[in-house]
Length: 271
Image 1: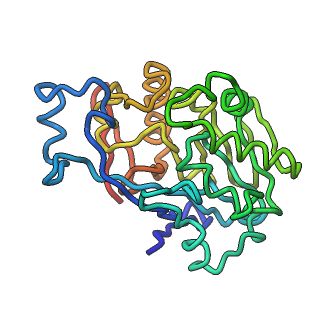
Image 2 (image 1 turned 120 degrees about the vertical axis):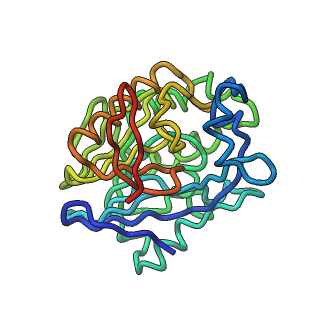
C-alpha cells in the first residue's frame, strides 16, 4: 500500500519498490557487538538481520509529477524489488505523466527502474536531473571496476538518457520544479542528492539508512563511499530537519518522522 502524506499542501507518495533483510555488518561498518549490539539487537530478526526496504518518492508538484528515483526495475534479479511502476499504476500515474526525475545517486536500487524493457527511458517525457559529479563517477573507469559489475546499471541508464537527450547535469543546490529543491548531500556516493519538498519534507535518499543513524550519525555503512563526508552530510540534514521542523524520510527508512536534537546527536520520532 502506498504511504501518502502532505508536504505543506503538496501531496507526496512513498513508493515501496521492495524489501530485503541485511546483516548489521553492512548497515554499520566495522560492527562490534560490544559497541553496537546494545542499540541494534532489538531491531534484529530471528536470523540476526535488519529489515530494510527500497523506496522512491512521487511528488505532485504544480509543474507536474516529480519522481525521486525509480527502484530496481529490471535489475532486481532474485531480490524482492522492481515494484515502483506497479505503485505508480495504483495511483493512476502513467510513465508519460512524470515530468521530472531526480536521481539521488547511481546505485541499482535507485536507477534500475528508469529503464524500460527495451533498455530505453521508462519516463520518456521527463527531464532527468543528476549531479554532475555523480554522473562523472559512474562513467569513470573506477566505477567500471567495481565488483559484481555494480556500475553497469547506472552506466546503462546514463547512456539511454543521453541518447534520448533527457539528462540534465547540475553542480549545486537547485530548484528542479516548483517546491522541489535538490540539495547536495555527498558521502554515500560522490554526488549524492537529497530533496526538500515545499519547505516541509526532507527526503534524504541514502544519506540515512537506519533510524539508529539519528542517535549515532557516525555509524556509517559499508556502502558509504566516503564515511566522514556522509557523517557530515547526515549531521547537516538532521540539523536542517530539526531546526526547520521538516518531515524526515529516506529510501531505506521504515517510517517517516520528525527529527529532534538530543545533545550532540538526534532522534527520529515517528509520525
